[in-house]
Structures are given as structure tokens and as C-alpha cells.
Image 1 (tube, rainbow, N blue to C red):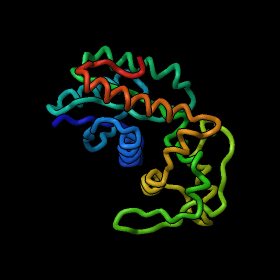
Image 2: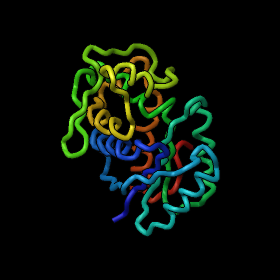
Image 3: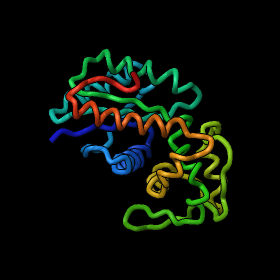
Image 4: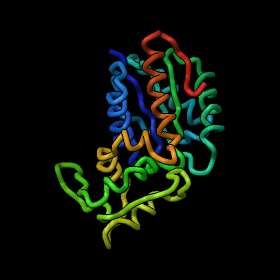
Length: 215
């Protein structure tokens, strides 16, 4: 059975990103995509970094597709994602690929859902619970305009508590409401890109094509 390989860059992004995309695939009713454990790459903003992870996935006999998901702090994903996709395309991989840039951070996916996340305990490993966002926390505005979402989340944690990606990112991701993200106002472009990328990979795999998203 072929597997899709998810490549991330941050310390806490792997399991959280895998949770998000597997839930999203189900929500979109896509053909089953079997995901390997996330792989953490380095320098994914550079061609050499992308080439290195592509070669790593190419070496896997069961590789069916590759998806790269990373933060893009200041640049414009609309401009930079096609450049990165071209770098993947030049590798001549025997399977399709996709790259999605979360602007500005993965945590931007939380902001449209903040009112639903606030006041809820965060359940981590072995069922251990931690205090989450303070009850009554809200967010308004454009989620992609905030520079430093991690710091914003820390400011809305109980006194003496700060947001820690390696501990809190996965529990918060589990509570994301996909319908709220899809209908957020203003729209969250990086979420739309993620949906399109998953649809693209599913279609490419079904048709036996090897292109890369975005085109």
C-alpha cells in the first residue's frame, strides 16, 4: 500500500498537521490517503532544503505523494508557493507533490475558532489535562495579519501559563471546527490552499499523474 509523506518544519507541527489533514480528508470525502508519520525537514524555505526532503521521500519504496506544510512569516504565499512547487517539479519525482504555506504561522488556523476553544481543557499524552485558553477569549479580524500568534495565545492563557507548541498545538488542533475555518470572515486563504492541495493530491493519485500543487 502506498503512503503519502507529510513534511513539516516546526518542532510541534508534525502530529498537529497530520491530525488536521487526516480530518480534512475525511470531511472532504476524499479517497483514502494513507499518511506516514510526519517527517521534520530543515530549510524548507530554500531550494536545497526542499531538494533534500524530496530525495528522502523518493528513497521510500511506498511513497505515493509528498506534501510540505510550513510557516511563511512575512512573505506572500501566493507568490512563494508556486516558486517552491517549481523546485519540487524539477526533481522529477515519480509521484505527485504539494506545498502549502501557513501565513503567518500554523497557529493561524486556531484564531477563527478561538471562541469555541476558550475555556476548554487541553488533553495531552496519557490523558493529562492542562489549562487552555481563558474562558471568554475572542478574536476578530484577519487571522493572517497577526505576527506572533504563539505570543497572542500565551497572553490569553491563565496567569503563569504560556502556549507551548510541543504540548498545546495538537490538543488545540483536535478541537478546530473545520466548518468554522471554511466559512471564516474574512476568509483564511491558507486553509483554502490546504483543501485544494489535498483534493489535488487525491486526484493525481487516482489518475496516475505526477504534477505538483500549486501549478
